[in-house]
Length: 417
Image (cartoon, rainbow, N blue to C red; front, side, top):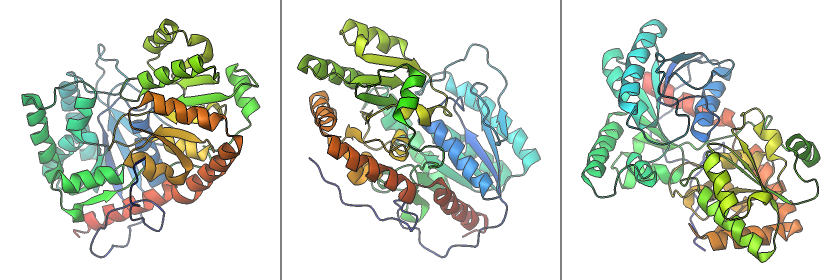
């Protein structure tokens, strides 16, 4: 098993990279224009980060406007502005698309119009497309931009199979990624490994980077009685239940998850799997094809408000995501619900879970099945990890602490420091 040295942490418990210089007092109110080039809100990890950051900033007294695509749904309490409706574009799932250039052009003009009325103090741009739009707005509005980076652009589109590694498009997107990184006044990365990648592989100066990982609202995500959750979902009351919540695709490791389910069934280990997320049709069919559908409940898309209860139907949670540097936001919700969790052994997963996780060799479905089977057979270990998980969520992963640190970054930039 690989080992990783611990990352430096702030007093809130969040891993960070050092930001030299004095910190300015945070003004009582800042106006934040948040760019979200995505169909926000669609009950997935990137959107949860956008929502929780905005909500926590508003709770601190700041004003936030989110500018986003035409599809998705508005979340209560957060003003949201959308581009004009594009009737043929209805994609809610994650991943690159050749439609995005014209959607992002519309997002630029929508954001410019909103900015002229809102008069923001700062632009907070999510994802590389948002940072590119923010780079253009910065020149017109003369306000600083914070880039919320959730992973390498080129690594993501290669992982999604959108371009070929080493090809012409790979090199072009690499140049674009470097341009965006240079133009941002400050970059917050959703993981410390992601921040290190910016420093070591992208040449971003250390004074412009901070690893500000995701958080969780532990008042909303908390342990609920298992029987209540299982009744709501019609799950077997006495069988062990293993849960997964997230987008269903290869990149999230769902193919490997089903391979592990098949392996366990052949061994005679028969927990019930609750797989929550979308698009599920392909994986329903795959489960039928490999003969494991009788042991799986596919729920389809789960409303974010229902997620805390439904997660608590589980005895164990899974995240077989196959990315070494991209954020893994679902883990925070697993922790807060007190769920022992099996993941692949990556720096991101270790940063979040620490000693509350069970780690399998990266990309190895057999070892993943082994680790899950061992955890299901060890009730004492599950109890220890459950308590450890909840404690870690409460003491280390508060969104309020993250938002205060983010507001300090805003204040330094607005004051020209």
